[in-house]
Amino acid sequence: MTSENAPDRGRLTIRTLAMPSDTNPAGDIFGGWVLSQMDLAAGICAGQRAQRRVVTVAVDSMSFIRPVKVGDILGVYTEVERVGRTSLDIHVEAWVRRGRIGQREKVTEAIFRFVAVDDAGKATPVPSLDELPPYVASEL
Image (cartoon, rainbow, N blue to C red; front, side, top):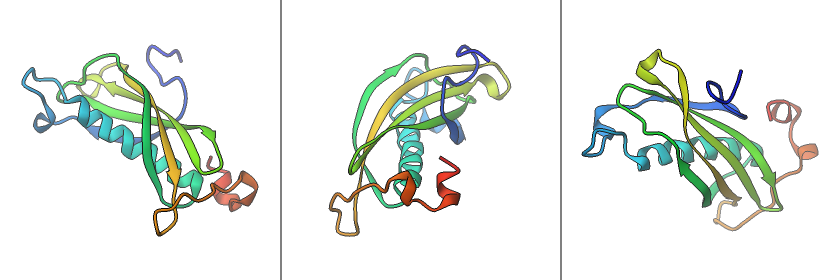
């Protein structure tokens, strides 16, 4: 498959339907709604890798490519791009299936940065792959 009809990378993390209540005055889906879906998916990916609570600290290189329309199915794909001592960068791509059955199109992508935190909200190290349980490491 090519990048014209399939995600370039990552795994499907969230799939949802764009509804009329999420539109702007022009009838397109609000960019903020799309961004929030991407943040949810990136948070799931980062939390699974970090095996602890994570918080979003930055969104880099966000670019909207095409609008999302009512009735589109939004699929958000995630992949761990970088793991630091306490932070993780997650590459996120959002794709739609037009009219629920049409061809897929990439609508936006970004890099989300997260920091792993403890119960007090203080930055805490992300475990190495060797420190993760085998069932977690095999899914990454």
